[in-house]
Length: 330
Length: 281
Ligand SMILES: Nc1ncnc2c1ncn2[C@@H]1O[C@H](COP(=O)(O)OP(=O)(O)OP(=O)(O)O)[C@@H](O)[C@H]1O
Ligand SMILES: [Mg+2]
Image 1 (tube, each protein chain N blue to C red):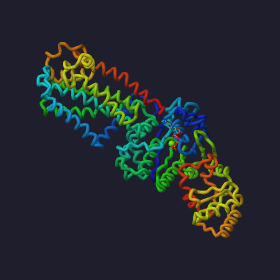
Image 2: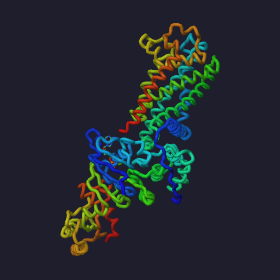
Image 3: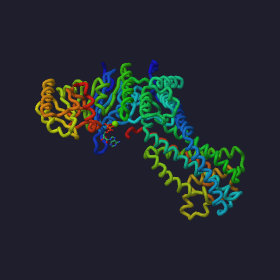
């Protein structure tokens, strides 16, 4: 398998800010690379360099065998980009947007039109296709933007945070579309702040923070770096927080992490089943009531926390809900 | 999501004069669709010149007397209002580009294997359409308030064409500004600050005799004066007696205006295209 995207030592500075600080990445043909990082990590900067929108200060990037700085036009005819903010023309209809992009790829009139209709159909936009895209919902715009990236069926696709700002259903739909693309053999670079998204879609994940890659591997590799299972619990009453903390601490092999409210907590443990039983026993004795308790395999959230020392931003406030959502693991 | 996809042949990637033209046409068409979809813009474009013609004709019309023009100030005025309005039309070019930059559409274009120049060529070309519409409306309003074309139709058309060509050149200036400061508000203010003095320190609204000397010299060589002068001559709105003491620029307004037009395009088109190409943003 040959690498269809290869970047070495990318550096980009904006005055004092170093947006990229020697980033390396490779994407083998037909695979999906997830570039995972919090706000300001440098994801968009990397995407802009790979798609010829930005010149790196240092380093080299080759896409589909072509150097991005030496022959940007050559790269452009082999990539499809869907940027972080949907770049659709709101005054044009969905059809007109796609038709225009087709013409600008050089597909010619007849083929551009046929392709536009085909893509509208495929992205469930056929009905809205002749309405100005100003009237589209956020999810529809995002799909239209992705469709625009696919107009010329480029061998390489670059999607910058394709699901940020979408609700759960729209995100699921977007995931389905992306999976279908991957099934069709596309090579894809995808950035995301959602650890779950990288887990779901990517073959290979690079975690970046402050312009550097801080970890690399499959989702499983990364999870095993964090290792072990966790006991997670949610209390009915926050006043029991101290007792529950003590119970968890007796089995924990890591620090016990506790949410702001004190109702949710979790810790890494060694032999999960025994640890869980022991915690349950202690909680029983202390008459502490839990609404949820269970064993959980580490998620990429844990990986992120482990690697960067800080939680991926979106997730900080939601950690209670997240833990409740892992009931099936108990 | 059931349609099957056929893989098209590898798209073209080299830029030829034909591809520049066809890309420019695609961009121009896209800009023109906006006129259709946002009728408010059109209304604004058409109402403000009507207002200008009426205000000047009736507010100043009686107060200022002009000897060079057979029908007095009103007839003198029309050429000036035409010139000012089409020059102001270039603001649309800058503002349109700025808006596209802000909305990320320019990034979409930049990521496509299209001609780099086409985005700007298409933009400046489609803005000519705005000016054509404006000129038609202004001419009709002018006719209503007593303006007349006193030359042949060919001469008059040449007058309109010169106005359009000069405005076209000016829209390359605003294209450059739009790429430098991609903010619609800034562009609107900037164009006001530059274009307002340019059009007022000219013969567009008042005869040059009334100016103090330094301003008069500036005004005499100001291309807005010469395009106005040329339009007046071509419409037959000047009397031959009035031009004897004028400097070369006003003696040969068509040629002088065309020289400016060529120089502006020769400087600002390459500057803008180079700016557009620069991929740091
Ligand atoms: N044009 C610019 N001028 C100055 N600084 C910039 C510019 N673009 C990006 N930066 C800085 O570079 C760093 C990386 O930004 P980048 O947009 O690549 O992050 P990101 O990972 O895409 O973040 P997000 O998830 O918020 O989109 C940030 O600190 C940002 O402030
Ligand atoms: Mg980003």
